[in-house]
Amino acid sequence: MEQETTGTVVAVSRQWWLKVNRKPVRAHALDGASFPHIITVRYPVEGADYTCRKWLGADRPVPDVGRTVKVFYRTDRPSKARAAL
Image (cartoon, rainbow, N blue to C red; front, side, top):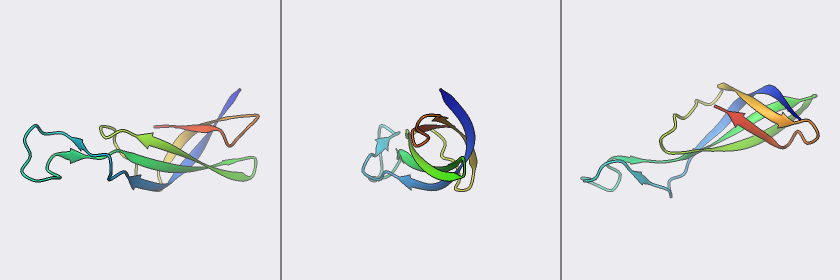
């Protein structure tokens, strides 16, 4: 069964090694490039803090550090969670 809680985005890292080209013709290597991100979310469950990571594609908006998000976690294993953006 899943429960819902709120978590806070504590880190956002850009994956520089996965470049997605958005333009058919480019003037230089990063012209029209977009990159996917990995966000780290910290959430509390019964007094303990857990973290989860979520991969965001290059076309998704990236949340700011400190933003609150919904987190769904398993009641039998709170370390297993997914962040909903």
